[in-house]
View 1 (cartoon, rainbow, N blue to C red):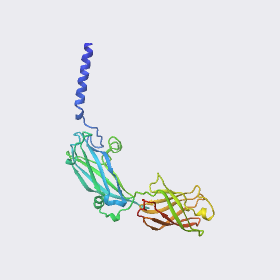
View 2: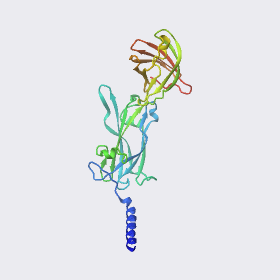
View 3: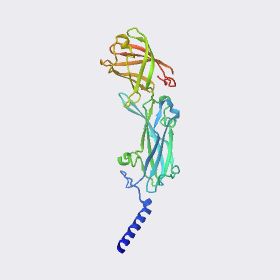
View 4: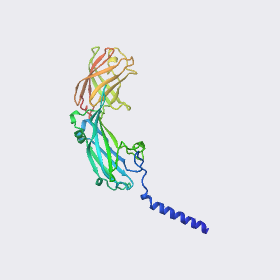
Amino acid sequence: MKMLKYSFGLFAMALIFLSSCRDTIEPNVPYTTFDNGAYLRTIARTSTTFNFFNLPGSKFALTLEAVDKEDGATVQTVEIRVRHRRLIPGVGLQYTPANDVLVKTLQASDFKPNNDSRFLRASFEVTAAEAISAVGLTAAGIEGGDVFEFRLVLNDKFGRRFSSDNVTTNVAGAPFYASPFQYPVSVICPSDLAGTYQFDHLETFCGKTFSGSTTWTAVASAPGSYTVSDGTFGSWQACYPDTWGSGNVRINDACGRLTMTGTDKYGDSYSMTVKSATASVLTFEWVNTYGEFGTVAVKSNTGKPWPALR
């Protein structure tokens, strides 16, 4: 019994010693060129897109946690760098400028203690206007689908540099580390055209005119695309009669530019041309490869005007 008590006492003392030393254990920081170093854990992605329709109010914003053997105190500066990327059809990716440029710098004093972790944290934001100016462009030259590539460079007090070019894939991609050092910020065009609308069919291939309703259903796998309940907007039923059935025609909203794609149950494809667009009425002509066509004036719903369309 005496020996048991003695052994238990040694075990308790070991537990106390180990728990008291927890904060002195260096975090595991695997790098390709360093035995240990520092990384920036992504705590919150507050804003990671730019709204094409509201560039002045858009921003890129993160909360970062500096992880190193001194709980974040080895950080000297964090450079926030950026370049612009655009996919040119038939050509490939175009970068402006060719290499990323500095848009903002975080200082060691920007990293503060917090209530959730022993590591120092910093939050920052870069407005779309700052990013656009840094890469030498203007707001008028930005298009939906463009991407701003932000890259972080951590410089520590030992003269070492950590970024996406020397971080391991484990640090960059594993959820525990969450430290990619590189963040793509897309210029998006929010679209909310789903709904059931009343319309007037002003012209049809058979000469008839009538009114009706159309339902546009958002396609979950293709943001900005909407399946149309009837690609002929009732003209088959009025002119033949015939029913739409299993046709699959979509209206696609690409930053305010509307197009029509898909085919009907006979395999004919569809397209559209916008004639005019106001907050209350969207007027367009649809046509299919069979030669059928119509001009439709679709009315907006109460409290939900049509957005700016081009």
